[in-house]
Amino acid sequence: MANTPQAKKRARQNESRFAINKARRSRIRTFLRKVEEAIASGDKEAATAALRAAQPELMRGVTKGVFHKNTASRKVSRLASRVKSLG
Image 1 (cartoon, helix red, strand yellow):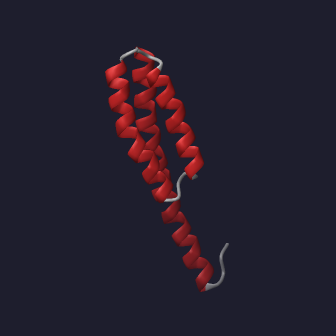
Image 2 (cartoon, helix red, strand yellow):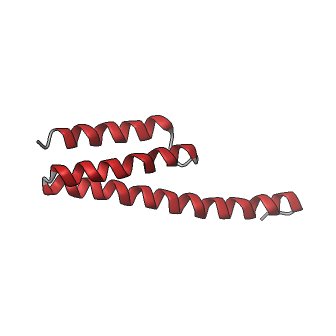
Image 3 (cartoon, helix red, strand yellow):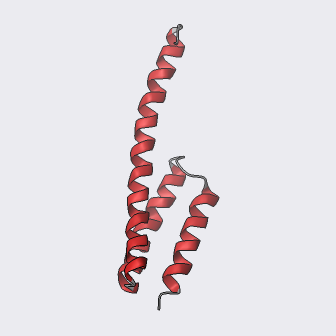
């Protein structure tokens, strides 16, 4: 357990940051799941629209420090190639 005032404050900050990051990760995963579901259904237009919505969310996660830039780029690239191959 934290003893100094500084350590106590850092523990509080870490808790709130963890909650915010958890919510962001969950939101991004929801967008990714929508793309996956559209791909599974075979609907190219819905998959394209879902990917267009998911891409900025993923990149926002990068700027907020939830994901690494290469991770987000890899996910977008793989989803885009799968959407493209639906046709």
